[in-house]
Structures are given as C-alpha cells and as structure tokens.
Length: 548
Image (cartoon, rainbow, N blue to C red):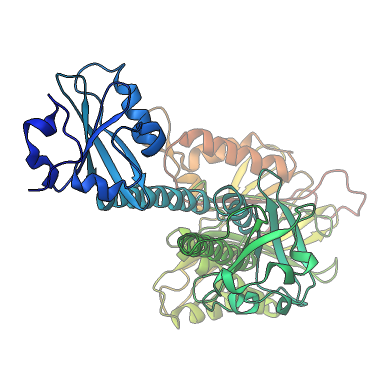
C-alpha cells in the first residue's frame, strides 16, 4: 500500500493509512491552514496543493475560506461547496483531537447540475406562467403587443420590437421599447427583407439562429433610438391560430452576453404564448367588429317626430347585459307628409340571441313588404307564409299601425296579429283598448285579423306594448303580475303628456314593480298627436270609428 505524502502523529492518516486509497479526496490541514497530508485522490484532484504550504496559497479559494471560518464554528462544522475546474465538490470537514481537520471532498457535479437545471426549469416555467397570465388577461391587440414588448425587455433582451403582419397598403404596425423605458407604437413603411430571417418569421417559418445574424447589418429603423451599438439579435415568429401573428425581434447591446441556445429556446416559447394571445385578441376584435355590424340591424331604432307626429319608444331586454332580444319595433316614415308612416311592434317567442335573429328576419321581411303597407292583412299573410317556410318553429305576435297627420289630430289604422291590443289615452284621462284582434304569425297556415281605425286628438296617445310589461312579476311578495289594470291606471295618469314622458313612465313603473326579479323582454312605443300645432283642426278628439 502506498503511504500518504505525510502522516503527522495523532492525525487520522497516521491512525488509518487506508485513507490513502479512499475514492474521495482528503486534505488534512492544521488550525493555521497549513497542509499536513494529502491522500492519492487529493493529489490528483488538487495538484497545486503541497504538504507544508497553506491552503490559502495553493487550494481553491472556497476551500481555504471554509477552513478559516471553521475555527469560529462550533460542532463538526458546516458543509461547503465549490468548483474545481468543471467539477462541483462538497467539502465535509472532520475535526481531530490534535486540532487538525480533514476535508473530505465529494464530487457532486451531476447532482449539482441537476439541481441547477431544475432551478432553471422552475424559473423558466414561472416566467412563462407570468407571460401567459399577463397576456391572456387582455383581448386588446394593442395591449397584448405592449405586454409582449414589456416582458421581453424585462426578461430576455435590452430592447424588443413586435411587428404585426402588414396592414392594407403594405405598412407594418409595430410596438417597440427598451428596458426601463416606455413602449412606442408606430406604423412602418419598410422593406422587411433588410432584416435576415424577418420575412420568414412573418410567414411563420422557424427562426434563424442568432449566431447567423450580423448585428451590423441591421437597418436604422430597427435600431432603438439612443441604444448604442447592437451586440446580438434574435428574430423569431409569433405563431397564431392558423396564420402567423407577426414576429418578435430581441436586441442586446454590444456589452451584453450573446444569446445562448437555451435563451433562444426560451424566446421561442415566449413568442409562442405571445403569438397565441395576439391571435386571440385579433380574432376577438374581428368577431366584435362583425358582431357590431350585424347587430346594428338588430338593435331597436331611435324614433322621433315624423310628419308632425310624436313617436317615442323604450326597449329593455330580458338580460340587462344584453342589447338585443325577442321584442322589436320599427318606424318606417312615409315618403310624403300626406302619406301614412308604418309602425311595427312585435314579440318573437323566446328571448336572447336566437329570438333576436328571428326578429331580424321579420323586420327585413316587413321592410321588403312596405309597398303593401296599405293592406295590413296581406302583409301579415305574406309574413306568415315566409315564417312557415323556415325551419324555425318559433312564432311571433305583432301589431301594425299606419299613421298619418289629419289636421290637428293623427289618423291611425291598427291591426294585431296575436298581439295585445294597443291602448289609447284620451285627453280626459280615459284609457281605451283598440278593438283589433288577430291570429299568431308563423303558427298556422291561415291568418285572420281585424283592423281598427281611429283618430287621436291633440295631446292624445296610442301606446303599443309587449306582454313583457303586463307580465312583469314582482310587487311586495315578488309573485304578482303588473297586469293590464295597473297599466291602464298608469296610462290614465299620463293624459296630455308627450310621447317620451308616456313611455318613460310606463317602463319606469314596470321596472319598479319587478325590482331585481327576472323578466321577459319589454318594449313600449307611443304615438302622440302634439299639442299646439298650427294646422287645420280635423275631427277634434273624437273617438274615431272602427272597421273590421
């Protein structure tokens, strides 16, 4: 057996010389840090360490510092850790009675690399989780681009730019920024071919490794203002839903380390999340725009005075967060003041979007039938046939009103198709129900309906409403209908009021009756003969005549 280089009396090497063949390196030093002995493994691992010399002069700095600190530590002493070239070592001190200390140096390179890889992966996962949380919290495309640039400059590069696909005209919307600065929006009319890898990234192709890109070849439009010399760049695509969402460019200054392969992998993972978020935001924006365009024709119109007649309407969908539903109304103005305007108010079976789609079909059909507005029954029959020829089993109720000014009053022709009859508020507060009845529309092949003709005197109002008003359930115990009797009484109090005040009053009372309870769609529309019009008075405020 080979003897250790030196075996001082009382040391562990003198007690058991087998330590020299141990698989782990052992270094023995006294309290002053002078090396007393080395085993074979230690001589191989630490060729600069010599017996009789100090640890400070010959051993790794971390080992010398740990030995010096050991004199102030109680007990066996703490385990320390450090590197020798590319090997990670744990130093385990063992005290001896003669004051010497044996440092056992255990190779834990694999374990340490595994721990560092785990920490790196945990940090990467935490970063990507932060990215996902920040980006998916917004469906605004501009905001997503701003967040992408902010996170990129904070974690990945000194500066960053997000380039969206070219808009109409071939210009590229961009958001750029530097670390610690504000982001900037711009629309650039540039040649993306000037940046190697950028045209491919904008088309969704895999990125070019950063080591292949020459920072000195970057065009001026890509260099951040006041940034200085560029050291390295990364150009990576922003994948989207089916089509690329754009490209991400990361820039580091000349004094910073170049992008490593691991950092490029993280950049691609980051870009994937950013691209998905931007694509979702762009898709949401497109859908919102389409929805707004389509909904524009479904929303109730704004009504006002036409041809000397006051009109006012209110609509409240069954869900307060919605804008459309199954109740609808339209006012189609006459081409001349002496002709009739057509007013339509209806209620489709059901509520929500499905009902609103059917209301759109009904309104479009009635608009196409306007040349026949003089014949209410024929219009209802043609509409009934159109609804029966669809796959939708829903039916509708509605009331048609042809309105024309007649001297100081207003002449009305009213026809109901399965709908509650309109109510007329006379100048003296009396409330009358127009005697018009009819069958449901879209339910049966035959349509039957009667038309009522009447005249409104100055200040008198005809109210058309849906059953969401009378069937509003509420009251003290929350289970009583608002009902026709309360509606009649409320209208009696509206004698002489303008049309706006009448509909406001009716809807307010119905809403108060409901409280916070659930309800159906509610719509009201008032037609009022104005007071004080300097026109030839015809008919005063007679009650009118009714015809079947």
